[in-house]
Each structure stands twice: as structure tokens, then as C-alpha cells.
Image 1 (cartoon, rainbow, N blue to C red):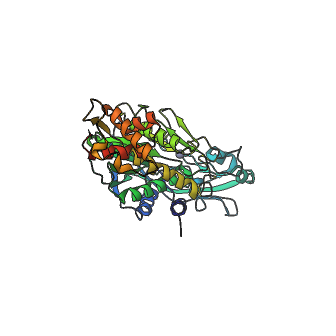
Image 2: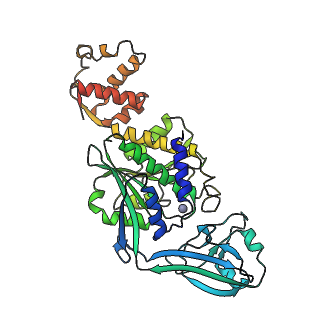
Image 3: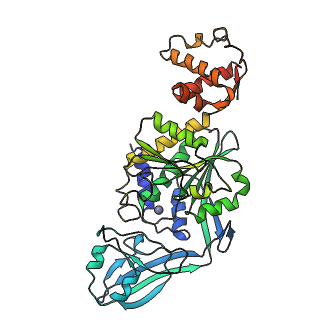
Length: 424
Ligand code: ZN
């Protein structure tokens, strides 16, 4: 029997080799594979479309690229790894001495066996990324360089998957899909999101959940530009990235800092006693930058394990499927599951009998708990919910102030609501 962690890891391994970028067939191939797990609505936005303050760029596609030595042997070969080409490289076909070629080569001298990930989206440039060890082994002399790429009018591609809820208010879960052969950043995030969507669809959640798979920055900006109306309905959101490395979980708050999602994630991480850290918002990182820009100011935080740029493997060939584990991805998925379970049940109630305690025994609310070992806790939860249901505090406030588990508080609220003592 395979575990969900192993299934997510298998998905990462399948997606890993594809050459993704902010546009192009690598993105489409990625969405095709994700689409085998959950139906996707794929959007194609033409080059030149104005999106907020940006413009959809030309589409980039690449078929082959290499550096060959005088004998014709490929010393750097795109076929071996999509990282070997500077992302968005313009085409080139030339022969030049190593001294001239060096200006176009990117290495990591501190990590001589690793290949860096580099792009040049908005400045026309070409280049190769290779290990320092490979470069050191290249003797002076002439090299043939070829990048068989196309930059042409086309489309920017992104996709959505919606899990319908009981109410039209939405939660967005957003992942960037623009990185080539990198596993943690962000195919692990994509895999966790896909499996989370599948789980949510097994019940009808309270909120409507919208999963957005889009290239970083320009993709989120495009989504926001095309969803001005819908944005009003987005009540909460989470950007998922770096979801599979062995590090502890990190949550970055929304710009608002005290949005419901910020409170819920903090509560879940603390209550679960997982090692974790909570970071304040910064206008950098992933697409929370766009969702939290002041014009939108959405309650969108970012959940990752080790945050971007905080692990040596970040944006290098060492961020490969061996770097992410089924266990870490399953753990990230479990936290997402718990976060959305709390978010879905969290309500603000009004006590309909606020003058003195209502008589619970007469309504069978004490008796119904007889014999249960957690009866005392359930009774306390009812008293706390009644006490704090003044229309200002939600159930999460009740759980935090009482120290009781959120589910116990929410169960008590359900019982009180069914007895007509509180209303949402
Ligand atoms: Zn990245």
C-alpha cells in the first residue's frame, strides 16, 4: 500500500524533469500531469495583455541547448537537466573561445558540484548554468554553443481547480508553477495542493476552495487582474511553497497580520506541538506579495517548511526529488488539512440567552454527556462558548482563551446551536 506521502513524492518525481518557465509548453505539460489528479480549468492569456501594471510577455519555448567542445562532445547538455539553460534565453548558435563564453556561464563556486538556477525574464540574454567542476574541466579553446529556443507572441498559461463549498465565499490556495527542475520550490507545493484539493472534495467544505496554479509574480498578477470581482469574495488564502524539505514548518503572516488565516495557522501549529516558526509579513517571497498588495490586502499567508533562500539547496540542482521526502510532504498536507478544518468551523455566535446562565440540564445538555470521560471538558466548552458568544469573539478566541481543543469548542457550539441557545 502506498501512502499519500509516497503518492505526492511520485508526482514530484514525474513533474521534476520538465522545463517550466513563466510561459511555454513546460507549464502546459505540468498542468496536464496535475490534471490527471484533479480536473483543471486552464486559462491562456495572450502576449501583450495588460494585467494591472504589467504586460503578459512573449512565450518562451526551448527544444535543445548545449555547449560542445572541439570534438563535438556536449560538455553541457540541456537534455540532462533543464537547469542548464538560463531561463528565457534568447536563441544562439555560435562558436566562440572559452574566454568569451565565460560571460554567459553561471556557476556556484562555493558549491562546486551543484548547478545554479538562473533566469532573465525581462532582459534579452542567453546563458548556461553549470557546475564549477564542469567549468574547471573545460580547457581553453573554441566551443560551439547552441540554444534552440523561441521567444514569440503566444500565451501565459495558468490553471484553477474549484472545490465547491456550502457558501460562495472563497479560500484560495496558490502555488507557483514556473520553476524548472527544482523539487521543493515548488513541485512539492503543487503536489500538496493537488492532494489537499482531492481530500477537500471528499466532503462539501464550508468555504468554496479555489486552487490557483500560476507562474510566479506575473501569473498571480494576471489572476488578480482577471478576477477583480471574485477577489471581493476571497476571505482567506494560503500560498504553498517549499512544502517538502526536512526543515520545520514556517508560516509567514499576511500583511494584515491578524487575519483569520494568521490566527488559525498559529493556533494549529501551536496546538499540534510541532516545531515551527511564525514570520511577520515582508513584501518579498512568493505570491503573497501580490495578494497582500495594499489595493487587495487579502488575508493570505504563506506556508512553507524552510522558507525561500534559507536552505543551501535553494535554486540549485541539489533541490531535487531526493531533497524532499514523502514524510515531510505528508506532514505539510496534515497541517493544511487541520488549518482548513478549523477555518471551516470557526464562527462568531450570539448568545440568545445572555442574562445569567441558561439552564443546560433542562435542555438535556448535561445529561447527554453522562459517562463520557471528556464530559467535564465538554461542559466547560459549553460554558465558555456561552460566555464569549457576544457577537465579537469567534470560536478560535474561545479555544485560545479557555485552553480547550478547538474541536471540543466547536462541538459544544454545535450542541448549543441545535438547542437554540446561540446563533451564528
Ligand atoms: Zn524560487
